[in-house]
Length: 289
Image (cartoon, rainbow, N blue to C red):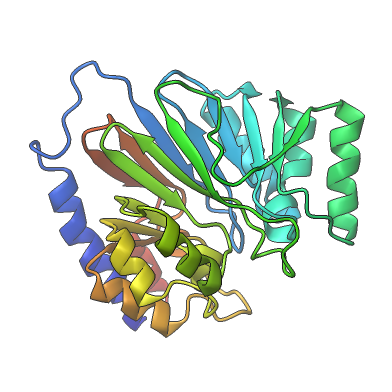
């Protein structure tokens, strides 16, 4: 309950800032929307690019498949120009099976890391059944989807010991607005990214659902985000997010948006500023607890 109060206060302050006319102003400009879909304990992100392309990153756990497909339908997505599986854990690829059955997928990007689970076997089987072209992500490559959007792969490694370390990390740039999507990488990968890249971004998707394995203070200082998206289930058994991560986010003065409290979260940008919309009022969570 304490953290939910903190989240609400910070987000209200941030909302005042980003809705100010001098920060967000789009006169018939191309816009991009990045949707962080509430799939409980897992990740699923839909990017609707300035030129009207659709990119889906992960699909949450298997039980979230229908939620993701319903969300795509609501957004009038009839085709995915690119589907990305950041790594083969069940809470990232599980829902993609339902997506592939329901939506036309033009191509898939994957880490190439093999995982010995039934969910992974079904995922590969569905790709083969539907003959979807698949490509292996390469570090420092740029996604070729939309000329107005720069999307660079900062991390991927199918030789890593763990699935999380192999995760695809993306930095999206549209105009002056940057998104850093950290998947489930650990502090080791964060340190490597600090040494190799300019990580400064307005929006960060916090790594590994706010786990103790990620989100060091040094990393957050380099990113210096205005808003942080946390994806986790309200009553998850892992204790996500941990206090250290929440305190680190507070220390860098970022607004905190957990899907557990806000539901589906959409960031709309014209490349100059951004506005954050969310499905739920977090005050309702406070009243219920």
